[in-house]
Image (cartoon, rainbow, N blue to C red):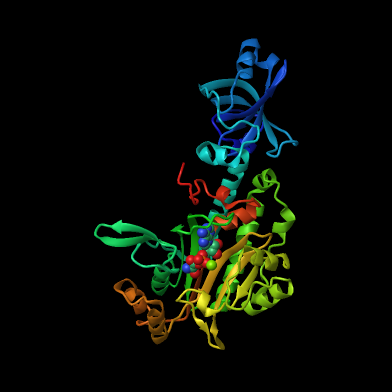
Length: 430
Ligand code: 4AD
Ligand code: MG
């Protein structure tokens, strides 16, 4: 019977056939251990010479890394393996023999691995990261469906910019100018007025010349937008959402977290509510910590975010940033119009900002004033203004960067490993 490694627990003591690749191998005179992978997981196959016969055993000993095979054998419990099972192999049929696979079990440099990303994805560590990424996506859909949200897909080719014009990817749209989406937010606001509570999940693009371990040129964002929800309602939703995905990964990705040697105690404590500090408090804290370079009106850099995050063991919200350093659509705090009803969520352990969000301006006149100040009076933004003209309501939303969240939860050093094919400064290949 054909099965997959993820389902061997349903076939204990049965004979099964699995389509797989030879991940690794070691052998002695009488016994060979095959590390097999099939995409769903990893299992050890044990080949005993006396059981398969001399000729077959010699063939098994010659198997090379990444050769594709059909392996037949009996599933037995094995408490020493992370999976809990191993395969007592009776037959190995080669599909295609791979010779000189470039990524060997020895150490390789990052550039070499990045050049071979199409193959590197097969490694145990990369496999674990992709499974965790998938679990975050799956539990995101589960969370928003439970909360009554509708998934809406904003366009990727746009005529306007949501987050300022300096980081836009320009392209031609026949005779017109167009840009790759930096954020679906403006469209999600329109959708929230039609469907109440909506979320999007899609690629976004930032032509940022940053070469850091937190920046991608192309990344995926989850953007919820909620009618009739204010800043505080939104923060509550954000902390419940982030706690939900962390707990889902803990529950459903045990083997993968183990592969990555993730410190589980760091994740187990992630529970709502999260601490909140204002931007003013953050500046004061940083000045007291010896960061003399930062003053009111500056944006935080990575070292600042890390210093703030280190004083908490939960993600922390920094709220009420100066209006002038935030996007045009953010609602000013009625109690202090110099600051916005907004928050960034900073992940623990130095992973930086994973969410940016705010309550949106709902007043037509104030929005018109912002258009003047930000030079947005061209035709591309007129539709967005109409959302304030026809039945405007308080509403809030936010964007969670998927790859930074994956990097944090998986506990990996660099964001480039959190996406299958990263687009980085100087890397558009493979
Ligand atoms: O803070 P940002 O720029 O917010 C927005 O785009 C809002 N319009 C979202 C909204 O309110 N609907 O980006 C949101 C998140 C950041 O917190 C970060 O996690 C991620 O997107 N992000 C990046 N991730 C990887 N590489 C980059 N260059 C990123 N820029 C932002
Ligand atoms: Mg931001």
